[in-house]
Length: 369
Image (cartoon, rainbow, N blue to C red):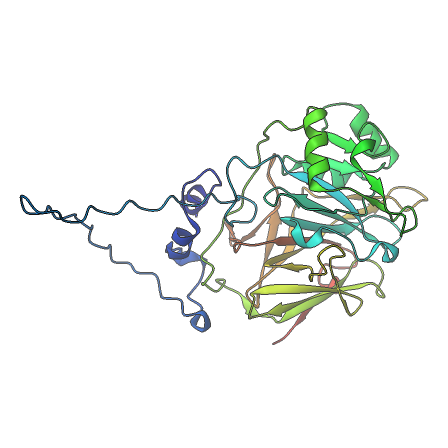
């Protein structure tokens, strides 16, 4: 598996076509419905170019095509390398903020409780340029700042809790705060009421990061990816799932769509759509992890442990893998099963963080096919 990860780093010259042919035996069996072939254990004979007879004008061997660069966050082809530094944008998820803009164009999407039973979204952007609208943008908490920074990202927000501002004032943090020095890189949408009307876009954020000295390359961890045509190893059939974070009348669900190989997201029984593109919010990989939550004050602000690890569910290709989440120092959250990292499929990944109390399983209902 370590070999697979090295081969699939974004700086690699491996093409997505090569990814489909990589024999990752430990990552699963071929999906018969998709016409996958079992990985071969017999080495292919090398192709040897035959010399043309003297005086002949035989064809010259064709040059292999230049492989497409890959994103280390999605495993999909990127326009070019190096990719820009990621942006971690805090997105409002209150009912009045929906539908949001830019969610369907994020490389990754986190969802975690803020306070009052409502969640906050962290949209990680890197590989898709030209996103015309992102928002509504909201405030940060220390654990939200930490999650975005684990990807080497610039944190994009509007305000924050006292604890979050204490971290920013201590220095060493790269952020763009609409309430502070980054105000010119946001706008207010007059068709919506504050505080659900603050927006930005990818071009403004890139321009702001450049002018504020935040655009320098960062060390961005990458995921391990597997062949798109293989089924997960050790998975159980699951057509999707539903979960709640704190309020049972606020239910998030994902339903697997076999034709497109993605999970479509809904909130309280309604499809979650992107305001800008009107496209459904979908993911190829969906991680559900349990973390300890602690109430800090009368306002209901929380501390969420995003480091110690715990129970996890990974939904891929109509199956669920039960394992553990781990996070090593300086790394992102990863899922392991029997001590081995579970690979991702090329595409968008969502990570949902639910409380461990009263139990991790009490928050999630897995749906049978």
